[in-house]
Length: 301
Image (cartoon, rainbow, N blue to C red):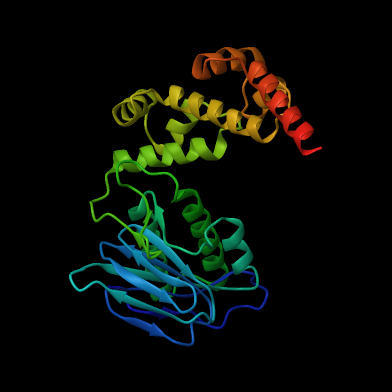
């Protein structure tokens, strides 16, 4: 365990600074008055429940991140049979909230982190540097900002999961998590899917995705085929076509060209693939949607 380490008085010019860092064995945390700065909790191997009065209760499991805002009362109770480590990083500064918000980390439930051990090791390196007194406050500010960016890049969207990987919401609003050991291949696949969902509108090639998750195109294709029955390219193409169809449903008066550009596809290729996927051309679908809209307008008038 890494003992609690508190930094000195931060320079008032720093928009983002490290307040504290450390790890502890799974134990009860009870803070009725909250904490003075943002707390980033990282769960390694254990499982427990976070309770925030007036907001709800969440189950936090291994490989997850949960952020509690300053001054918010909270309590953490580990499960009795859970054996793990809970890491914590306190982040302050005038820009701390806006940076966490803009990177998508400031959400109301725990989220899964791909490549969790890499993030954990960076946190422990930060602790060692602070413990040995070799890192200045300005340097730790840079390291904290980089860590936030790494977390944002590693965060797995809650709607992306593979065979039980990812969060599942129970009826009582809690977030459950599987206790299975992390599988690098599945982590890479989840990360690849998340990248596709984030960048389907961009000029994203499967090679770019493979490079980003540290695998060859061939190996990534094998992972996609094993879990989805299609290649990575086919998955990305179907995702784009599905997104285009959804976009056309919301914009019935749009053109085929606009729909193709929305998902980053060349028009003629888009038309061919759309017909192959849905059995009709996007133009026919647009005509049908316009007819329905006209009938709806006439009925309402």
